[in-house]
Image (tube, rainbow, N blue to C red; front, side):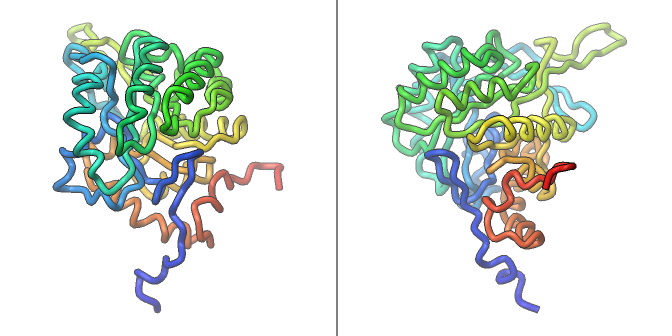
Length: 315
């Protein structure tokens, strides 16, 4: 038998998301990996397709009042509230380090209104070391956090203006907390998004019935982890049927089987979120396992498998 290292030789893990090209499809999800510096003693960044640091806003934000996180059955509720030091501090203190890392850096931004999003995208245009910008238009834990992710026309206009404002590729991160996510995805695609990130957290809450009070200081928060994987898979599948724009799958991904399910459903790449909390090395493990998973089904590239789901009644 051939050595394990040679079994998966010749497998192409590179992916292309519009103008963004990655060495492999394994990314970290924003808000679950800090600013990468926190993970440098545990993770070989060169093994990853890319890193998304914590979402940045125009002005510093203190975030929501505690509790901010609550563990639930098969998941995690969070209501952090986009706690960060603002875009200027991010550029001055975090980008020099992030830009030196041997992987793609995708900056997640969130604006309180249309103009803030566009201004932030423009501000980042001349910053070196950025591979792409992800528009967080789907955070359920701040006021107006999902406005642009819940209205197709607002989403299209925002994406379009951000594309015009920056030289970097634009990703649009969408919310599942809508009636028809495919409609919003069409808006983002029409606006010129290079890729669509699906999905952000699912709105939920936790209650202490003895005290008759909500556990989260914000009352409601965003549910992530294995509990939302079926929802995320459904969203990826529906959006894949509606648009040709590349998709990044997010939601409950922790194993190589999870990764492959999202790719077969229509995602060209994936982001790993909640799993980073209990296994900071999970992204490296997934990247290492991916060539062998592709080989198992006779594929030599990611592109061969994307959207290969065989539906009943269809050839």
